[in-house]
Every structure is written in structure tokens, then in C-alpha cells.
Amino acid sequence: MRVVIMGCGRTGAELATQLDRRGHEVIVLDLAQSAFRRFLRHDFKGKARVGNGIDQDVQRRIGVASADVFVAVTQGDNRNAMAAQIARHIFGVAHVVCRIKDPSRAEFYRDLGIDTFCPAVISTELLLGSLLGERV
Amino acid sequence: MYIIVGGGGKVGYYLTKGLLEEGHEVLVIEEDPRRAEQIADELGDIVLVGKAEESLGDAGTSRADMVIAVTGDDEDNLAVCQLAKVRYHVPRTIARINNPRNEAIFKRLGIDATVSATSAILAQIESEMPTYHAIPLLSLRAGELQLVEVRVPTGSPAVGKRIADLALPPGVIVTLVISADGTPRAATPDTRISVEEAAVAVTPTEAEPALRRVLCGQPATHPT
Image 1 (cartoon, one colour):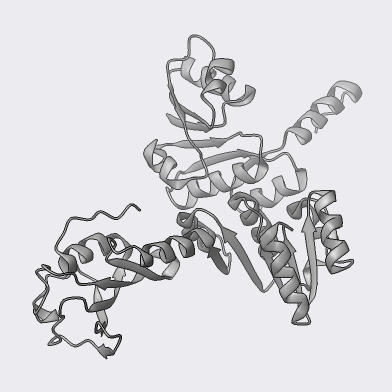
Image 2 (tube, chains in turn green, brown):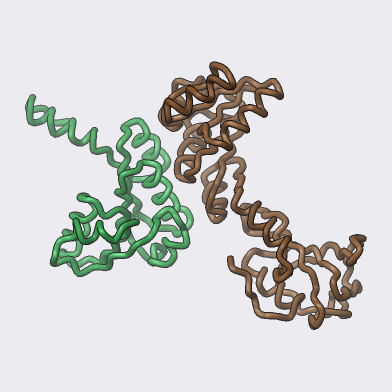
């Protein structure tokens, strides 16, 4: 599988490393080269590229059009949503995932057909499970 | 009309001022509390402090006639307009964009209009530079088509030829020819273009460099 990951923070870098170890073709994109040095594991053999993922010229250059999956996990909800929608609607990527921290807007983009996840919702579910033995 | 303005920077401030002077009901949403206070001091109690995309729920957006997002970040303007359009069914949404290439995705996602200062400034500068012979006048159909003005320079192979005999790229329509003294005439297949006359043409965006080569007879040196 060919995966483009936008945002090389802790989540992006860890996902990139794990997918790479499982033999997938991974391209990780970030605005700062320092993010690669800081967060990517030493055994990561995929590609790391500097660029702005909400710029469609950058998405074209790194080959988003031929990706099977596009994952947007930068710090900004709006950046993630915009990049994900460019990957979906301009480059036709079949599976687009993005992180949206605001629960209400995570739902909004999900309704628009973007696969979103919200860390606050997931943490809450985990905590409820751990504190009350509830499974949501 | 009730108009919500997202972003109280320079553009947002002057836009709001103008809209108020025209008698509209305006609400500005500005994230920076100090900036918000400044605007309120000058324009009155019309400012809501917060991130625009998170504040639409408190802004009476459902009854807004228009939402205009003018922060400096394209992704924020897209988020505000998309929410306004889809969640609050605002009839008209307008977004400021900085990267002119974003026009297509904004249109695709249902934003009614985009305004690109970058494009306007580039066009203005290019029109002032004698080395550029093609001036973008207007972008049509979400950027698929361009209306351009091309000045035909001395030495161009197009000089004196009938328009019908030019090897124009497919999809290009020359609509007007403007003489050096500024007199326009409608272009027909038999129209001939002289040196220093300008042709106004509609062209598919990707064919614009080829059109320029036909009319100017030189390789594309355009920076975009």
C-alpha cells in the first residue's frame, strides 16, 4: 500500500514507522525537516519530504495522486481538513483520514465523507472503559 | 443584510467599516482579544472574540445572509465558509485566498466566491511590466478558463496574419482586438493583428503558454 502521511509529529512519525516496518510504501510530509530528525525512528526507510500539504502543487509533486491512503495529522484541524479534501477531490485518493481535535467538527467532516478521528473522543472512551468498565 | 466577517485583520477591518457604512448589520469574529477591543473601540460593539470556525454557533449564523472569511490563512477561511454553507445553510459565502491555486478546491467544496489578492496584485504588476505580453484579466469556471490580453510584439510571426490562419491551441477564442491607440474591434476569422495591437482571448488555462507563443512568437517566460 502507498501511504502519504502529512504531519510528522509523534502520531505521524509513529504511524509512518509502523507502516514502513510492515512493508508499506510510506511518504511522510512536514513543514520542518527537524520534525523528521526528532520523531522518525532510526530504522524508518520510507521517504521524508519537506513541504506544505495544503498546497496542491506540493501534493502533486510528492505523488498524492497515486497514493492509496492519505493521512493528515498536523496540529491544525483546518489544515488537516483542507489537505484531506484536496487529496480526495483534486487527486482522487480513495481513503483519506484526518485528525480533527474539535469533536463537533470531527462529526461535520465525517458527514462530508472524510474519515475523521478525534483524540478527545477516543481518550474519553478509553478513560470511561478504564474507570467504569464501560465499553462504548 | 446580516453579514458575518471572519477575521478582523486589515482586510476584515476595512471590509467591516465599508459594510457598516452601507447600512448592513455586521458581526466580526476575531481571535485576538486585543485586536477585537481595538475594532470595537473604533467601529462599535460588533465584535465576537473567538476562532471563527468555533464561534459560528454563537453568532446567529443561521440567519446570516452572507459569511465572508478574510483571515490570512486559506485553510481557516475554507473551514469557516464550509461550515457556514453546509451546517448553517448560509446563502452566500465568500473566502479570501492567498494561494490562487486554491480557487478550484474552494469552488469544488461549495464556497460561492473566492477573492485572491495575490492574483490581483500579480495581474497589476504584470500589466506594468513591458516584458510580459500576456495579462490575465479574469479567471472563469473555477480556474479552468482564463480571459487574457496579449500584446503582439514587433517580430511576432502572428503580425499581419488572419486569425483563421494562426495555429491557435484548441479551445482558444480570440474575441477582441484592441489597436495601439485603444480602439477595440470584434475579432472575426478574417481579422488581422498588427504590431503592438492587443488580442483579448478566452483560453483553457493549460493552453495559455501555447497561445502566448503563437501570438508573441517566443518561448514562455511566464513565472507562474
